[in-house]
Image (tube, rainbow, N blue to C red):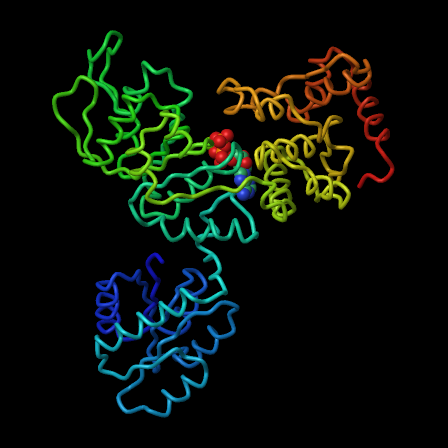
Length: 475
Ligand SMILES: Nc1ncnc2c1ncn2[C@@H]1O[C@H](COP(=O)(O)OP(=O)(O)OP(=O)(O)O)[C@@H](O)[C@H]1O
Ligand SMILES: [Mg+2]
């Protein structure tokens, strides 16, 4: 298990600092608080594994703090520090559920052994620790209460403060980039840049200069000296997206940079020392990519110090209502709409669907529905007519190889495109065209009518028609 978090609660400043230093020197993450009230506040914000608290403190003493902590649903080991000879309070603390007690002056060897055994007990505990409120804030739009997502949040929380590389894998649209941003936000690097580079989107001839930078005159056309992504991300975090698409020579160079923390711009004599946390992401199976010779094995091992696997949306379908409702709020804010929520009938449809495009597809569906609904509750009428039918891309994914662009940007492509196949009625095609145009104008009806070349009145009538011709069970 990764580092445990130990909160030290002690009113006397020197004792507090000394204790924190001692505990940190044993490899624990530490925080401090000056009394029980601050201590409990810290417990809620930081979610420590172990609390070492003094008994006698102003405002709220150690026993009161223990009492508050024991009401929490998850286990935290509380170690009570009592005055020399205060046997009675020690006994009371143990009765109230303290993990152990120590008397002052603290014997470091005994504290060390108590912390070690408390840590072992926590590792064995079947009840997982909740996500700290601070973490929740910094996770941004990434939400989910399923065990899968909670486990991911805990991993992100645990490894954010380290500097080692992280590999994030998962299907397209599962939130890999959001996870990378959360790692950055939860690290000490959060006030420094987060730079994301999509290796699949850069032509092979430019990728090295893009990532490592170049000197003036390094190659034909290099008229200016240019910093690469590594330098732009200095002291921050660099996300190398679609790492499997990086050309082999660039992969070799990257490996060296990761090993030496030094890079040489194209055409430069000197090396530059860099301090960048590297996160790599891919929607391919990395081991298969290694086997296929697309990803260097040594680079894979170097990146894969920690591996986060983002589950596909259908594998954590119970999160769909929470994610969908969060997205409704996000879209209300973005489009100035006031959709109050999602009807039960629509929610059942959303929960039953398999979401091949994962959370991104859900987000696009919600965005479109929110624009259409404006102020109404979302209902089945706000789904696209062909909702749930397999997309051609999804069918292709099973068998034939497909161009890389299909997997990297399906959402962007379909956004402004009306696809009508033979067999569609004119009315149906018209409806799709009107709705897409409306979505593209962000629900500006006047503008949409202009683009469509119809009067606002006709547009209003059409929209009324569409709202009425839906199944009576809707919403
Ligand atoms: N757990 C989640 N909760 C809420 N929104 C999510 C979640 N996961 C993903 N999203 C949304 O889905 C969209 C796609 O997320 P993101 O760009 O991080 O995916 P990705 O895995 O990097 O996809 P790709 O492989 O295509 O690059 C984003 O708009 C994000 O807001
Ligand atoms: Mg991505």
